[in-house]
Image (tube, rainbow, N blue to C red; front, top):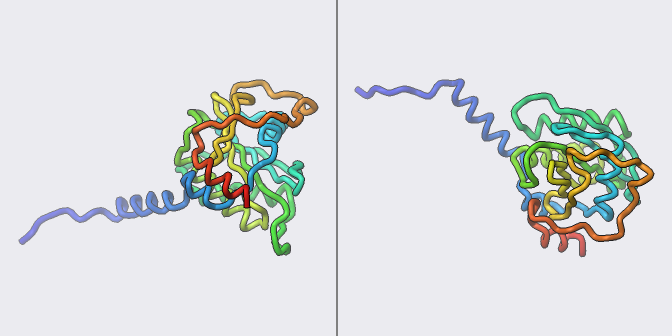
Length: 208
C-alpha cells in the first residue's frame, strides 16, 4: 500500500494560471522580430505625451498616430491592481481605444499606429510587466485594426523605447512637463541605451 498526498485542485489551478500568464507576454527579442515600426522622432512623441498627460508611476498613456506621426488621439489610465497579465492589459487598452478613436478594421492594411508609454518604478531593464504590456498592445491593435507601434517606458532614469535601444534622460518620471509649444522635434539622434536590446534586429526591420 502506498501513501502520499495528491496536489490540491486549487494549487493546480494556480500553477495553470501562472503558466498561462507567462504565455501572454513578449520578450524583447520576440518584440524586435515582430517588425514593430520605428518612430521617426521618439523624443518628440515622448515629450508630447508627457506634457499632455503628466504621467506618474503606474500610469499608461496610449496614443494613436497618423501616417505622418501626428497625434490623432490619446488616453491615459492607471491599470487596476491585479496579477500581471497581458490579457487584462489588452482588454484595458482596447476599451480605451474604442473610447477615443473609431476602428480601422475595414481597411486592407492599417494606416494608423498605436504607441504605448508606460510610466513605472524601477530602471530601464525589461520586466515581465513590460512583456505583458507588449503582448496586450499587439493584440489590442490587431482587434482595432491598427499597426502595433512602439512600447516606451518612462522611469526615474529617463525614457526608453524597448526593443530598439533608443532613449534619453528627459523627460523622466520625476521631471516637470514642458509646454506643448516647446516639444518640437530634436534633429539630433537619440542616444543608444542598452536596456531594450535587439537594436540590430530593429535596424534590419527598418531597412526593409
